[in-house]
Length: 249
Image (tube, rainbow, N blue to C red; front, side):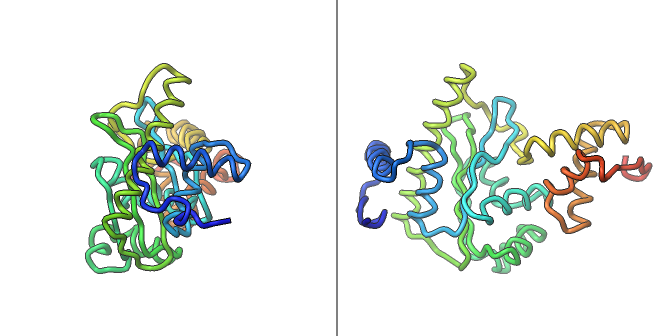
């Protein structure tokens, strides 16, 4: 089979991309879906991992799709340390292109996230917001294991992928709820169902508000050097309980 680059050549418009992906999905016996587009984006741009972060009608962000272990790990790492390119892209509604996470300016910008992401095997990270006007639907993230500096043509094409994902997500949400995504008021953190459940349980254990409970959960994950989802799973399974601490309430 020919490569993605050979099949597309210099096509860059949204309509051409949609048509090309529809054809490619048929050739591979797949449905044209958000997950498929995410996977093809990772292939197209030579990324070792990719993530699609989406916001709901409340503005809360969640991991919709991930490609590779890095695609799952990096969004969770951002939640744990509370900083990083996904958060910035979502809040600023502007692409965040990091060619080398180990560079000194990046380490100063994200002193917690950057070294941990580099240790995990990510050296370049490109985050493209799925946004138009006040609508904030999410972020497409491409992760590379080596420093990478994309050219202008590559960035333009990646933005077309983001536009296509935005259109598909808005269509899904309108079909499901009759509403389109709104402004990303609190578009971070990125959490899954088990983290929501654990946060509620911790709030009850500490007799405190959800924000404080979530802060305690993040602090415990960071202190233990464990993924947030693992610590949350321990809370939900009642293997871990949080005791009140007057200094942290």
